[in-house]
Length: 115
Length: 115
Image (cartoon, rainbow over all chains, first blue to last red; front, side, top):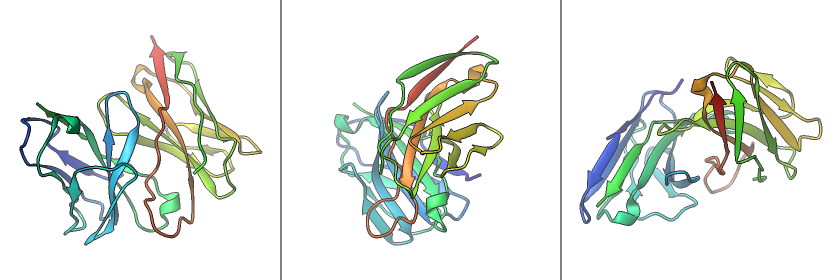
């Protein structure tokens, strides 16, 4: 079972602020992902990483950026938050070996509200 | 990836078996069927996956038809805590080349367990 920690769990912040959402995992998984989900809607992949110093944009365009300096951390940053960024952000991991047969493991998400 | 079709919502009485259908009529020979669920305000939770044989684990059973065009997730003795949105996803194995290999989540089935 993968242990994935996302902080903060809830965040309310004003427009224009810089924010960083943290995601860390203890399983040493190579692959990490960020999904965005609006209430009652589908999950959309916004970023992913296959290992240290590897980051790519996902299927849904996002103004956020990510970094992967260490295997266990995959933070997501918004340089200037806007109300349109209000959403739930979910971090996930999977082992790099045989990824076709390895499930995604999710954290409990960060619910972001930008006022 | 093949698209999936699921009912929007279903009810099931507590203690009874919950049978959640999924249609994936355009599935390819190398695509796995994955099931996840998402309880309100939490990240998605992996349940089970399979290619063509029926699968069972401690959470559920997965029945895949012989032609692989549909599948059914079975929760043998549903409890109130099984109320959630259930996602059926198909994903190719031996994914190669560029691009994300994160799973694509649709709208899922909202399963409501009635006391």
